[in-house]
Length: 262
Image 1 (cartoon, helix red, strand yellow):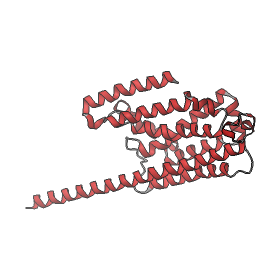
Image 2: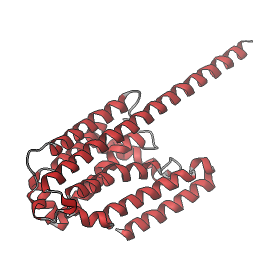
Image 3: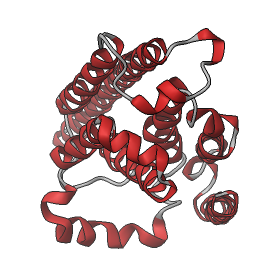
Image 4: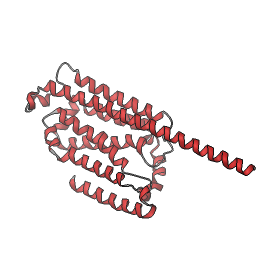
């Protein structure tokens, strides 16, 4: 994993420097590079830090690991990209989107995002994943992939033919976070522990398996609410900015027409 993130970091650094050389600092500002580096660091924190070891013994730490991969890393990695940085593959994205068909639709991203969280938290699947390293790796891969697909429709720097416009991103965010938040509430208020695996692990901080599960569910529900709040505020700000720019363009056009008429 460390080697993969190092390769990704080097490839990004090369493209970031090339983008600045070709189109100037505005095409690849420093904060974009910082976001991408933060995304790679988040992946490492989730998978090769003490969080990964504790995740085998505490459900709440496993939940933190999942949310880092699903949301935090995906958001930071996508914020690190611009059209110019992606220029070598830009021309291939639209044809790939057409070939993907329904798989490239935002509704598919919602289903994937919600689906991986609900399916992997079915007790039978969850216990199988924590006991089988190969299945556990597949769990992490599907969560990271679903997160990148989901957030691409909100943060992707390249305009999609299925781009979410107007208030659609708010509905996109709200529906998803509500459905995942419900799962967090189910875990928080479950009358008994749903995952037998954790009943036989060390009870750190004096937590029982049921208390550990309740905290994990609370972490999920709160994280979904916080992320949705931040994202919706950002979306409204972006929407207002686009409206202001549209008004400015309309005013310039009116002025040009008036000047031509004179």
